[in-house]
Amino acid sequence: MERNIALIALFAALIAALGIIPAVMLPFGVPITAQSLGVMLCGTVLGARRGTLAVLLFMLLVCLGLPLLSGGKGGLGVIVGPTGGFFLAFPLAALVAGLITERWRAAPLALSAGVAAATGGVVLYIFGIIGMALVLDKTVAQATLLVTAFIPGDAIKAVIAGLATSALYRARPRAVLSRA
Image (tube, rainbow, N blue to C red; front, side):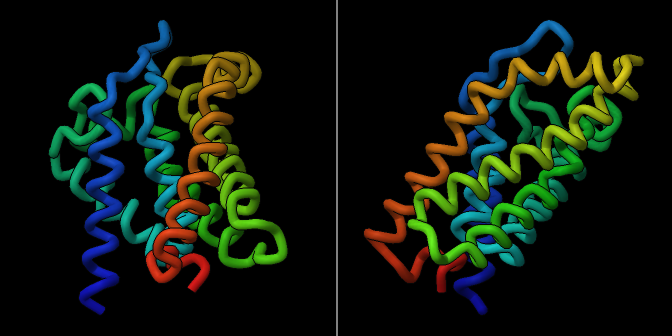
């Protein structure tokens, strides 16, 4: 029990720490950050349930006003900003990434975790596109076009998540709870 709580807190801290990496701000107000990599790692390493709890803990801290999002943002206002859809999708993305990693055991872990992270990224896109369309007063097609700027970086993050999860499993198999 204590181990689970510690890992959930550790991965919430990982998402926050990845917000320190300087973001690339796009002209329409949505940054390219490393925090979505942390969300995916929550799912691929901790599994669906614990990964989602880690993301929810992070989100609670942000909503309480801690400046943990990229650029030092925090508070309830982030929900109604251009990134609100992405933020609200964090727990579902971790859940999806965790479920895929837990259930797709026939493939090598690097592949299943990479696919899981990419699929979690698609979840982020769906919610992010809808949120951007609403907040920026764009059509869904226009918001989708804006999101295409994220695809190369998110593909790299999916590969990193797959490789990192696999490397952690080789080094410490018991630490990858999605495969426990």
